[in-house]
Image 1: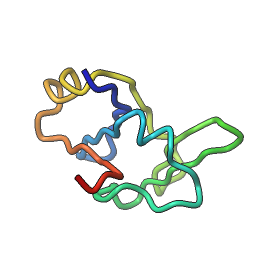
Image 2: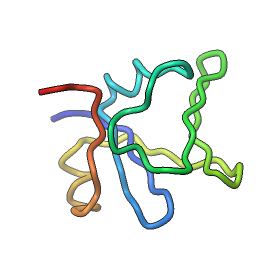
Image 3: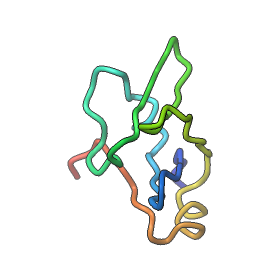
Image 4: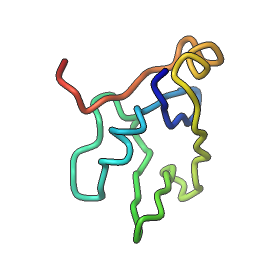
Length: 82
């Protein structure tokens, strides 16, 4: 029953655990496997993702199992080492 923030960029679908996503900031490295060309921005608590073309990447909040059912080839990004 893990909550995730999911997004699609190009032909890739990825999700990040909410707890990991909430901990991201502009100054720390992004999770391993983060898609090239996508930028994480946290501006005064307003979080957004932007592609290399400057267009905002839509995000959706979901449970991991629902995200995985919709995007079985998608990847789960994590800051964890376990």
